[in-house]
Every structure is written in structure tokens, then in C-alpha cells.
Length: 266
Ligand code: DGL
Image (cartoon, rainbow, N blue to C red; front, top):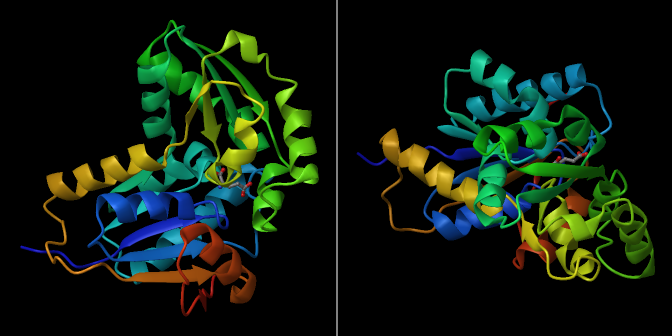
């Protein structure tokens, strides 16, 4: 039986749209309700307690929208809040860390992986632990890049300021030691063209494609796929004024998003 309830996807802001894009490619007929917590972005320099509280409130909101699966499209929330959400709510909830770590472990040839992410994600050492679990021979080096998220939220994706900030962080990573770099924040794929100029021919991992595959498998295994062949509907919510979000989201998604609403979450 077809299940036309939506997938609930959330991030602190625009970054999770990289996951929306991948999910739309993989399972185009699924409806999506997206929440960007624009009033409280960035999450990456907040405490664990706050990140758990925000993630829990948004999950509750998405359940009220009848979500059948929650996709935490935020590395920071996945790193710090996912186990709590999975305990607290009786619905499948998946995060971006494991899919990203799996892809990196599959791709690295020299077992040396770099990770860039928010301060909270990097301090949690979540990728290091996950990669070690998959393959204890993998060495991980990491670097927090706290200014990347505000750049993306401002729609500043290239140019001299962006280049200077990327160079500032990348110089702290010994790129000669690694062959694979995980973009450990869902905002960072938006900076991919700019980042690529600094990393020679390293393999770049963003977890969007891998989490889309995982979402599909969960729907299939739980028999909650939407069999309707029509294109799924997308509803976007933010927690602050919708206008800026719609403008930047259109640039990124390549199509206008209508009717961005404000979610009453605080
Ligand atoms: N896109 C997020 C992540 O993947 C959130 C970043 C932030 O809000 O600091 O970590």
C-alpha cells in the first residue's frame, strides 16, 4: 500500500537543501516537509543542550506534519542530537554522519581522511569514531571552519572574501597526508566550487547522495514508500523571515520555491 505521508527534513538553515536535492533525485515522488531553523543558525558553535533542544522541537513539529521518516540533514545535529531523538521519538530517524563516513571509508586508498565541519561537529570527534568503527586503520585529521556557514547563509559562495576564508582554514590541514576530504557540514557543498580550488585532486565527500540512498532503503524496508508516480510536493518552513531563504534557495535548487512559511518553533 502506498504511503503518501511526507519525509521530514531539517537543518539549521539552507545547508539541508543539499540533502533535499539528493533525495529529490533519488525518490522524486516522495513529499517533503523541510525546516530551516534560520532564527537560530548557526548550530555549530552552540552547546550540546541547545542543539538537542532545537532538534527535538523541530522533530516534534515535523511529526505534527505527519512525517513518516525524519532526515537530520545537519551534521551538527546528527553528531550531537541523533541518539536522543531516536530514543525520544517512535519513528525512523536518520542522520548524515554514518552515510558520509561509509562513503569516505570506501573511497580512501591510503586510509587517511580529512574532515571539515562546524566547531561542535569537530569537537565531538564523531567522524573519527565512526571511521575507526568501520576501519580501525583509517587515520583522521580535522579542521573546524566556523565562518563557512555564515558565508552560505549570506549567499556568498565565491569571490575574494570566500577564497581568503577557505585559504585561512585549509592551510591548517596537512593535505599531503590525506586522499579524501569529508565536507562534514551540509552547508559546505554549496562552497564546493570555491573549495575545489584549494584541494588539488582530493576526493570530496558530501553525505547527501549516501543519505538519499539510506532514506530510500528505510522507506522500502518499512513498506512506507509512496508509489504514486507524480512528482512529490515540497513544503518549506523557516523559523525567521522567509524572504531571504527563498532567494538563496532558488539560486541553489535551480527552481523557485513558493510559499516558504514561518514555523512557530522557539
Ligand atoms: N548544516 C549544518 C551542519 O551540517 C549546520 C551548521 C550550523 O548551523 O552551524 O553542521
